Amino acid sequence: MPLLMACDTVCRMQKSEKKPGHIPTVSRVLDDGRLVEFVYVPKERRTALAVSTDGVVTYVSSLTLPTGETLIPIRAENNLLRHQAILLPERADDFGTIADLVQDIGAYIDRYVDLSDTFRNIAIAYVLLSHVYDAFNELPYLRFRGDFGSGKTRALQVIGAITYKPFFASGASTVSPIFHTLDLFRGTLLFDETDFRYSDERSEIVKIFNNGNMRGLPVLRTMVTPQNEFDPRAFSVFGPKLVSMRHRFQDDALESRFFTEEMGVRKLRVHIPINLPEIQKEEATALRNQLLMYRFRYFHRVRIDHNLIDRSLSSRTNQILVPLLSLIEDEVLREKIRDAAHALDTRVRAERAENPEALVLDVVQHFAVDAPDAISVQAITRLMIERHGAEFERPITHRYVGSLLRTRLHLPTYKRQGVYVVPLTSAVWEQIAELCKRFGVTGELQTSDIATSKTEA
Image (cartoon, rainbow, N blue to C red; front, side):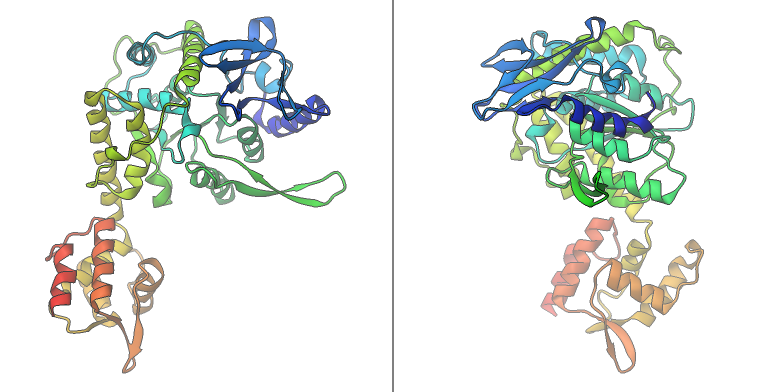
């Protein structure tokens, strides 16, 4: 079914299935700790609710709560289900131990996708994380980046098919049905070809990604009621996300939320099939069934382990790394994921070091010793032109440099004797030291020495 119809389908589904006291339900954590999950058997055109009570799973057509509400499954005739826009488990199957499950997931990925060893381990951990994501407050994203024919869409299809309630979309989709479907199903968004041509489309999908990795940040959109009245509504977009794209996002903050695999940089292994066989769908269904049991068993056990924070990494990298590490008990696998996190941190800092803000900081550091109590913006501009003038397509002016200092780096400036200057107080140097650390800027002095030398002076 074209995704353009998804928004209307979801709205009609909610209206047609909702009876007094009846709530169409996809998943729910009840007050008594029981978990309720929606299951769908395509061959039988049948839906049900799987209820986990103290490790025992039962399947019901409705569940009445002490409040008087009755939870019911979405009907099997729903278009999103029939056209496999959303993939669901059929039941909860036993998987043995977590080590057995990890091995089965890895073998499944290896059959159809060619990944680096490090990212393969990240993908396995991410699949597990997706099935208990709502036990955490922050999440990372996975990205497959490369040109056409590099295998990025294949990776999205294969790995995405075993994540939690995967929902497939593409760059040809409008954004409105994505909001509605994510809000209703609360699953994993799989977005193919995320490189948008028009800025308005790009800004809308960026809202989903910027708000979607942290709990409690819904996206507000205005709906129109049948009476033509405007009705603002909050849409929950929090959840796991896998994307494939050719380039990068312009927003550096958004870039730092992704673990990225560069596709097509290695020779394809000979056993990887060019076309996906039909058995892949059956294997993915079997793994989704086992992963549903994993959710039932471990949802109430998983928690953030703050002892896994790596102080050598940035706060953002730790924010997306620790949820993954908290699920992994194998220390060898943890180290491999940490190595990937260090590579991500290094890449983000290297990209930041090429930004205009980083170049200004590089120049400011030059004045760490010689400047008595202030640096003039004119002096900073002259040295910027001398050091980095060839790296800019636009002229470097006093106004441009002053804007970078004030609005991008938030450094104070004031006018003294007709010239704008940056005051070099100890507090400002401490701020500069932190900015240098954030942007990966190293200069004549260590950033920790800058503030110390000025404080002593």
